[in-house]
Length: 236
Ligand code: PXP
Image 1 (spheres, protein in one colour):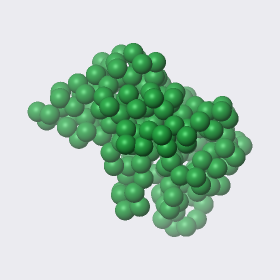
Image 2 (cartoon, rainbow, N blue to C red):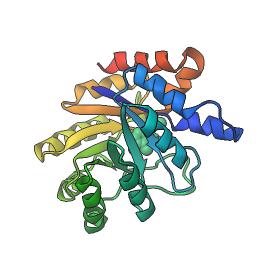
Image 3 (cartoon, helix red, strand yellow):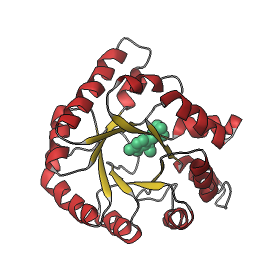
Image 4 (cartoon, protein in one colour):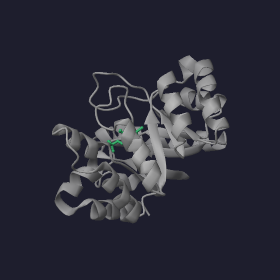
């Protein structure tokens, strides 16, 4: 499996002092050096961490694929079409949430989502939908012509080590198999860490894991490059 590294928290730290350090661009360059398969950044509506200029600077200076997480809004679609990241991962977004809560409800907005995705794909951007491991969401992602789904691993991560772990894990396994049968490619992420990530290797066909919080947390102690390499070693 490949490792996409989410560097939003570098921006969170930078913004805490409204200054320039730590540099988000430097984080992207280090992630590239550590062989991340993607630099993942979430440009939120409220710009609480990643700013528009981060996307532009990374695009101009880093060769590694950019995976732009964004809400399905007109503003974000315009930014994606202007900047052409390698991929867009469409996520639900609520202003008050601490981090992305739950997957995107594609099922109840299939027509909207289909129309939202089309210009992105027409522009050559790979489109992924961040969904819960739920059969009806997988079918809907397929109906919308998404290239990828990213399975939300939050429930599994929260349940890790408890009696609910296997139940949550099986949901991921089943959803990944169904998606691949429908021709969708599968990524996964959210809440994964150095302790729980190994089980992702038991799921056939996952291409990339997107991991942020645990890598940046570990980077505080061992440095970003080593934190990424350690995670890569666990999922190779
Ligand atoms: N994937 C998606 C779609 C996300 O929204 C996030 C969090 O920004 C992640 C992966 C990474 O989650 P974590 O920071 O818990 O590793």
